[in-house]
Image (cartoon, rainbow, N blue to C red; front, side, top):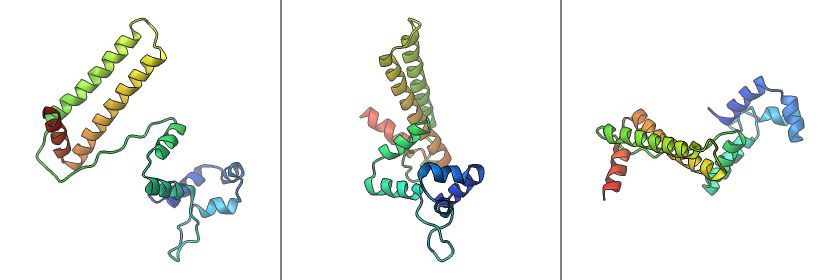
Length: 160
């Protein structure tokens, strides 16, 4: 989906006047964000989504996206790069996910043993959770692509 299409959908379900007022912009400017830019067909203008994408491209600094995700109450998890198709390598990969989950449960159990969780323990839980999400996302992406070479290469790297 193009950014102007997403903004068009957002404006259909939101209040364009409120958005314009909150941003200190004219209503027409907000509506122009929902139109394609250039190419003769559209009279739109560069919108905030396109500008953030350009910032990310120019800086390659994912903290921009992490900050936006944090503002939305979530977290950014980068998708792993997928190489050319290769025969399955599922058992060690599924074992890794199970081990990561077990490690998370171990940290949670240790933290909650005294019926309270302090900030240090919460940080440890968060770190294990982020590890589990990353490992699982990598596995899911490999499944979607039908390519388990990245998982096989990770396993080889641990053995060496």
